[in-house]
Length: 314
Picture: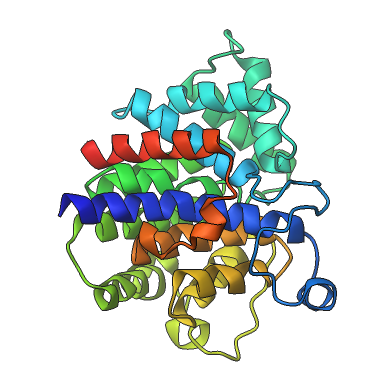
């Protein structure tokens, strides 16, 4: 049982990293251009607008790690610990940081008595101000991309859902985004905690994302599981989650799900990371191609492994 838990946790965390790194060079390209220029991308190629090296992670994985460190430090009430990680990361000069995340983080820094450690209220006030400044349009995927560790760490699906919704609102005040983060985390919590087979794991995804009332019918299984469905790989959280679910429902392996996700183009690294997190939990770490994990930086692998072990032993 413990080995299965560890395999799902490592699968999800490394799945995020390889999905992010595989998709980063394709970000903002459309699917036709990717196909014309690269064919079907199945290997770490590097490049893109960020000029990443093959296997280089971006903000999707970096913010996931920040959330994980904050939870590991203060699991009962992780908001301020996560916030310190966000501030440290934002001040490190990352290659990319989403507009909504950037606005909320820098607002929190400006209003905090201690700029290195904004309070919980600082985070929620800053996020609300960003939401208002964006005319109520803060439903981006920047909190969904980083939320997986919540579901991997907390054993109770209810606790995972509530914590994920709170952590989402540190930067993205939109309720729709918070709910999707909660659903994603609840799915991962159930997959990790229950000794169930592959078919049952698929059913959990359908039960939570497609059938639960809190999603308000946003993710209909009969449409998302159709090969003819046309995903919209945008930064809008509903489009991103729907695209990831489609890639899960229409493939039969970790590799095929993530390859399909990143070759949609658009917000390819984030949709690759979300798909990788789900597929990694479903199929496990051993299903991730070794040629992908070998491209990740050794220091990133060590950090991922250490945080996976914390979650596995909680």
